[in-house]
Amino acid sequence: MTRSTIHDVARVANVSLSTVDRVLNGRNSVRQSTREKVEEAVRSLGYVRNTAAANLSRQRRTRFVFLLPGGANSFMRNLEDAVVSYAKPLIAEGVDVVVRTVPAFDGAALSRELNALDTDALDGVAFVAVDAPEVRDAVQMLRRKDLPVVTLVSDLPPDLRAHFIGIDNIWAGRTAGRLLGRFCGATPGKIAVVAGALMMQDHAARYAGFRQVLTEDFPHLEPLPPIEARDDAQLAEGRLTDLLASTDGIVGIYSLGAGNRGVVAALKTIRSVPPVVVHELTEHSRDWLLKGEIDAVIRQDPAREARSAVRTLLALSLGKHLNKDENRVGIEIFLRDNLP
Image (tube, rainbow, N blue to C red):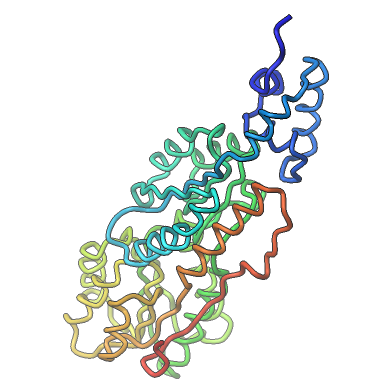
């Protein structure tokens, strides 16, 4: 009689090999309904564990994939470098982290990458989410296979992913609103807003928080509809230049995404530059602060996000307790006077 294998258990339970492995090794990262399906498959097949094979299985390497937006976005390149740097010493401990780039703001491209993941060979995935229907469908498929899914920087609805690593973007937008409200003083006017794309939850949430504060505490300031420049410096420069030339009464500028090199270039087309708040501390925004070309930077630490994401995936894949406070990412405000 042919002896049943772990592959048979995975096929009958309709789950991945890694899920069967987690159930057989008593890890807590598997949903109860999935655990019961695996246990029922084990019983129906009369599966008996091969102890030697199980020991070998426990020695297998842990593998994670990070999917990050490609392109010239300085923050994303800093985040990519931070993930690679943090993961490098983990290789000796049996943990492999692969970073791949996908086109920014492209839900179809991201969903293709997620659908192509070999869940039998992976222990978790982290990615910057595009909130599009095809991405939600791909994530639901991964969760049905009990692959730990972590969103990074930009989120999805909480019921889809296991955990989110990033700042509270409503708070970040409110912070920007408070800064510009103070910088602009009592002068009434309009605030120009430059975004990447509002299909990204982080950008939409920042704009919502920004509007909240202006409505509540600075009603004399009117936030204009965001220019969506897809974090592209050339697009940002052209569209903001047109807005500044065609709109009277702009007394402040909030850039809530990337493409800030284009924003600063557009400011050179006007005589009197209003207060400017941007996101992410890079070599460029540091230089603009020092030169007085912008007034404040709202930062999320890419090194902390990289560290928290890898630690979170490790905890989820091993069924260990997840310390959410330890992995929390806070908001930092930098002026020219407190640059690190």
